Structures are given as C-alpha cells and as structure tokens.
Image: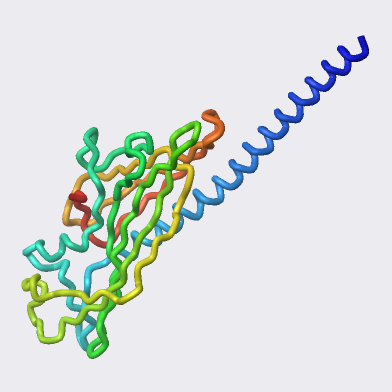
Length: 234
C-alpha cells in the first residue's frame, strides 16, 4: 500500500515538474520572440527607408537617375519582392514550402551613399533569405540578411544613367556579410498596392512559431515606403 501511494505521489510530482518546465520554456520563448520581432521590424524599417539610387552631389545640384525616362537603369535599384502564386504583388512564404537543404531569396534592396567628386560613392546590395530549419515539431526557418559592398564613380560618364553598360560598381573585397535577422519564422508575408516605378507602401508581416509547441506563436509587422520604386524579384 505504501509503495502504491508513493508511486502515485511520484507520478503526480513528475507531471507537475514537466508541466512547470513546459510553461517556463514557453514563457522564455515568448519573451525572446517578442524582443527579436521588435528588433527585426525596426531594422528592416530602417533599412528600406535608406533604399536609394546612386547619386552624385554637385556644387549646385544632385544628379539623380530616378528622374530619367528610361527605367532600365533605375529598376536595378528598386526594392524587389519575390512574387507568390497567390498574389502578383508579393504574398506569403512559409517555411514548409521551402525544401530542406535549400533557401529562398524573398527580397532585395540597395542602399547608396552619394559620391562627392572626387570621392567615389558607396553602395550596399542586400537580400533577405528564408532558410528552413530541420527537425522541429512545427517547420520553421531563419530569415537572414546578406550584404555586399561596392564603390562607384561616374567621373567621365556625363550620361551614366543612360549608359548602363558603362556604369560598373566595383565590389569591395571581403565585404560580404551574412547576418541572422530572425529565427523560428513559420511564415513571412508581403503586401503592396502594386509594382510601380513610384514609391509604394510595403507591409511586411512576420509570424514566429515555438518549435516545441504549435499553440505558442508571436506576430509583428512593419510598414515602410522606400524612396525607390518597387518591382518583382525575378
């Protein structure tokens, strides 16, 4: 009888212990996710607000290729969003849709610092990559931001905005960076009015899921209007 009572007591204690551990784990994950989501949305907001065309600061004006009629040059520096089959102007991308051992580039943008002759300009070409993570109860992934830096110089190219082949930025050696933006992402969703050469409002939503508990998740979003146009990522 004593052994039976002790066994029941130990079983109840074990369940309480495990339940307490799960509750503590979910609480810790939730707090962590809230912080990461806040930081990620702030960073992306700041990044896309800085998306710009290559420009030259002159003594009396700013030479800006966004004003040219031929957009072949300008489109290279638009914010580019990967279209999804259910929405031509962006869409929802889930970790479960991306095969293991692969990744999907979901957005690209370019940040340019103007050149101040005789000093060259600088630019960073960036991309957001969605990478699934294996062996989780709910399939989630990482969002990473990769970047390469370049210099550019339009000296001797008075019509460089119309002479795309002559405009060739030079990559800075060892400038590549690969930074984790957010983890435990189940899906990311883009929403924009339309792809256009004019600046468009972009809404980006992030949904993070606790890998050990399908019922525990957190969401956040940011809305940005970059200085460039927005086009489809090919």
